[in-house]
Every structure is written in structure tokens, then in C-alpha cells.
Image (cartoon, rainbow, N blue to C red):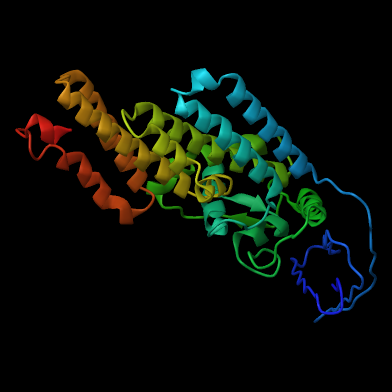
Length: 329
């Protein structure tokens, strides 16, 4: 793309092989466009010069306006309820991401997480008959790779049409049977339930994936809501951590990391509440907080053993039962 004699921009567009057309949105005033095709034959090109407003962008703008309106209208009430601010903001950003992201491998090791979710969604049976279009998404190849993703809304819509027409999970050619690690079942539970519900409803494969990602987002938002609500201090800091773009992105894809993050932060919030109950000499509240802290840490560490030392924090707080009141704070 040439905007002048020396102002040149190179746009490289790589797509999965199941797309029949490539759409590149330049969004600029240009003087000259040159096209080069490597490893394939160029059958035709078309330049469309008009104003486009992607549906996902319209959804994001609408949800953002709604979120800002709610925060402005109920500002005084939300000043002391950061957990509600998190719910409004996280759902606004997360739903926009779920809709805008291609229904393909976009997250970290998403194909491995998809295998586990499909395996759980097969319950009470074993094995799911998958067509080639779905089976390709369970590995990294030329049809499904993080290096080959739709770069425009038009390409994303074509990918959805392809997966809707060819994504068969009832009479597919491949009987998929995956031996999932059972300790990861709690992290995949919400996603598997959503996928199972979508399959029972007979939805197209893109809609099933969208429901699965939305379930992961809702589960993460709920855990962060509980963590902020439980914490006696640092609630706005937890809100900031919960809304980190990386955390929202992971929650809008197939991954067990949002479950881990939510559980560990809930455990940390319960630990702070435990110390506060000890300071107030409220034995009943301290026992409840200790039970919640221990359970959250155990659940958060189950999917990923590398976090197992976090469980020891549940018992480290009891090592000095005779500590002075100022130390308990």
C-alpha cells in the first residue's frame, strides 16, 4: 500500500485453508495497491470503497455505553460496591471479545482445552463423533493454527459459515475419545455444561463454541465477584487485577487459567478475612473463612500442580496461634 512516494505499508495476510476468500481492511487513503500471492494462484481481486461498521464493534460500543450509563447513574451506590463494578465492566469487555474473536484457536493451547471440554461434554457416554471441520480444531495444522487466523470480520463470518455447514458433532467421521486428567474437571465444568447444553439444543458448532466461551467468562466473573465481596481490604485493587486485559482475554477463550486465577484470588481474600476475624476474636467467622480459604486454594491448585504450594498457605496461618494482636493484622 502506497500513501506517497516513500510512505509504504506492507500488509501480510495469512488465512486457514478452509477460507475461499481473503478480505484485508486497509482503512486509509491510498494512491496505489500492489498484490503478491506466494504459493497460490490469484484468481481475482476487488477493491470495495465504502463505510463499514462491524457488528462486533457495534456490540462493543453499545455495551460500553450501557456500562458507563449504569456506573454514572448508580455511582454513589457503586462507590462501596466494587464487585458490582467488576461484573458490569467484565461482562461488557468479555462479551465483546467472545463475539469478536474467531471461533478458532486464539487462546493459549486452546486446542488442548477444547479436547478436555469435549470429553466432559460427552458424559454420560464416551466419545463424540466429530466431523473433519471440528476434528481439525483439536490440533495445530494448516486448517486451525494461531498463525492462520481470520484478520477481518468478513473472514470471521466466512469461517463461521464453514464451521456451521461442516461442523457435525452427531454423525461425524471421527469418534473422539480423550483421556482427560480428572483433577482438571472442576476448571472445565462450566464450559463442559454449556457445550453439552448447546449440543442438546442442536446449535451450530460456532454457537456451541460461543456458549462455551461465555460460560468461562461468567464463571470467572462470579469467582472475582465473590473474591472482592469477601475481601475486608484491597477490594479496589482486586477489581483492578480482575480487569487486567490478559485476564479478560483468557476468560473469553477456552482455558482453565481463569478458574485458577479466580480461585486463588478468592482464597487470598478469604485469608485476609480470616485475619480480620481473628483480630476481632470472632471464632465462627474465622472458621468459615479458613474453610473457604482452604477449599478455594485446593480447587485453584488442582488443574495446575505448579501452584500446589499455595495450599500450604491454608495451614501457615495457624503456625503461630499465640501471635500478638498487632501481628495478626
